[in-house]
Image (cartoon, rainbow, N blue to C red; front, side, top):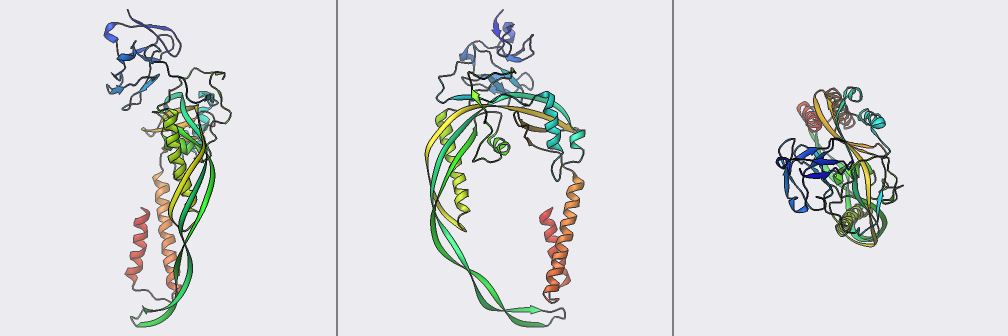
Length: 367
């Protein structure tokens, strides 16, 4: 019978011809491995869990079903050896394991204004996956030339009409502010260190949320050269989904967006922003992550945890009671504000129905 080597524990796995191209389980470690031997067979396979089609590409060491999230390893014979790295490779080893993972998850579930109060105690973890995810970390300097407009506040006297509670109309004069705009320009200089997710399982949005400051990526501090790092785990290492050239292109776009945001803070109305990058470098850093599925009141939720810091991002169960209380409090505040404005205006407002309509519109906006 055909035989392949398990990529996780290196044990021999034998399978029948009927199982060729299907997922088989390693008897030693329980890993799900696709029974494929040659690279030319890596076109598409069927998920053993849901039957969905999984498209494979050269260089993949792991396949993830986009329909149900099932993960399968590929034997070394089927996953072609990667070309020589264009950039230096580093790895940051796991600091968060299953022994202390729940502690960080519960701490995250305990926070949030609208999070269900018992989420940290009533939630139950149903699925856990861990692996090293490829991240490109790019450093660069940026210089942006911008143009825009600033304003000066001026005042002019205008005549207005008002109606009192008895329906009598009268005119009055009031100083009305207006803005006088003038052109301006300037230069902004910044240094950036951005992290780019080169993974099929981790979105850039989730990485940015876990990173905190997208312009100063520090998640890989303490990373060691890939070939010299000492690992105390056997979690799989995912191959990068794109090369260094693509990473630099994406870094350029990301830095340009960050620079535009920075220049927008320099002027009231930003009209143009031209950014030039220099000293752009990139390195490939493998970072540990946990993927968790937990249930709360029979409803599943997914989240991602940083395997070094324990930081978490994902969906939380929401307390309907807290949301209703917040809406009611907001409506009360709106009513009080309207009453105060009416009193300061000398009791002049169009009608009682007008006041009620303002309150209801505010309530609808909140809901």
